[in-house]
Length: 288
Image (cartoon, rainbow, N blue to C red):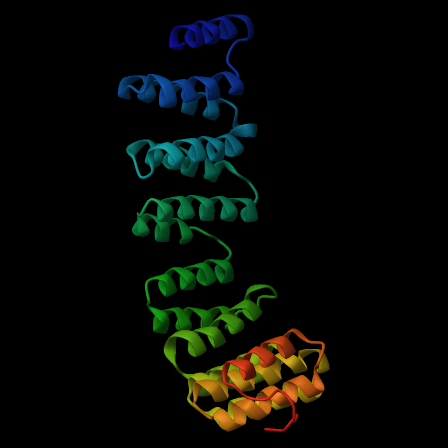
């Protein structure tokens, strides 16, 4: 079968000359069937040379080749060679935003194969400063370096970039809430962002994580009062909080209230199951 495939490729080459389809078949044959290092090495060299010879189509072909090589070999030398060749081609691109996209693609590739230093190096080549610093904050965060990440986010916010400054503020609030336990700062930022009901949900979550049950429930009542469509979810969230704090009387009252006020909601079914689990009659409709 290998001999037949090879003969077919030679016939194709003789008839049509080099083409991308030809080279993809060569590399596939070497990787998946012949499985010899020298054959794969030679095929990879040839396909990289062919890609470089047609700059107009090169980038998409580097991406396709990377997918093939990475799927088969992971962090092998071959993967590094493809990324290296792709990276060298970027400088020839005239458009800044396109170059930035490509540097980030290369950075993601190095990150995928575990070369964090090289990934940071290529993110650092991104010319759009807010975008570069926003991506770097994500990389620091993935390493648990949230204090440093937050400092980068402040710098991004200060640029007043139309796209990345708002993203940075959102990300900084989330970092305070989810990673640094700086709940007062998170709450302040969420009020500045002012995108209810979403930010109100984030604020109540801050209070819950801060172990301030009354404040969390007050925000949930505000959500229920001001945003009727969110009412059943806010009411049920209070029941969940009361149950977690072992405040059974309040939890039962809240569940009965949901049955009475929101009988057709998904939360009504949850409230019914909750009351049955605790052996409590479903009637009454008591307030919390």
